[in-house]
Length: 231
Ligand SMILES: [Zn+2]
Image (cartoon, rainbow, N blue to C red; front, side, top):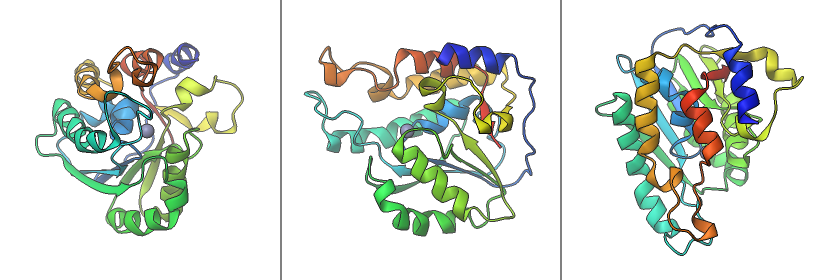
């Protein structure tokens, strides 16, 4: 499926949606969503104010793992994100952790709304997971951000699992997919940043519960396919 999407995206013209400049707020359900989706584009935004918001610490990525516990993931994954953002060129990344339960954003929408609203107040450009990405946490966050995004800000939605779980067909939102520009430097930095998510991109052991969460197909897509948003 990712290969079909890659072909489709490569056939699209580079046609980024309007960027108003100014403060950017990038919201992720889990630490790694933003890098997988738009890491290359982000690496060209280090000259401006970028605030990263992670709704959860991603502690539920390895249920049943004999190797790593949710507490260990909660301790490690925010550090992986910092390292990844440094690879992208953000020396002192501004990351706000909302610490909501991984896997529980749908049930925590009220709390999510309350925490997200003030961060978006002065944003010019807001990036959030695609509201129909297919992962319940991504969808909940994407939908809440779409509700509370100030009318003065521009919203770009980031497909993440969409590229792995759907095929390009006549989805109604296809007409709103816009391909971003990605320099070869950006692509190189994105690959380095992805490698910083050690708990996600590599198997932790041969045990079935320890397989790489970001599987090979999604890693290949994130490394090679043009970046695109729904806007
Ligand atoms: Zn995620």
